[in-house]
Length: 139
Image (cartoon, rainbow, N blue to C red; front, side, top):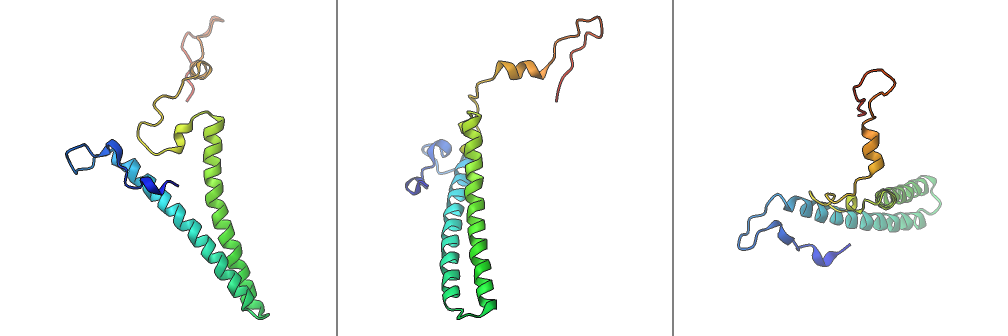
């Protein structure tokens, strides 16, 4: 996370004015997501520490041990869900060679190279066997 740039609004606020434009929406979402990730990570670590303290102070009580085990387990599951969601997004971006999906913005993905094979798959050539001359379009 880049905590030093949280107030870098870039070009979404025109110079000479203090009025934000719609270009600020991705910046706000980026700041919100980074803040939520920091909060989730911190909350998960605090929950793990708290559940460890509850385990040590349970003194053999089965109900308290079970409750602290569940708290520890669910805090790890929550943290892993957040981490794996970002891993999946980054893997998709890497393998499809579309890194712009990892950034917030309205115009981040405008320079995606079009594949000639994909364009060919969208419309099939006309039937040359004497049938209909209409092109079949795939959704």
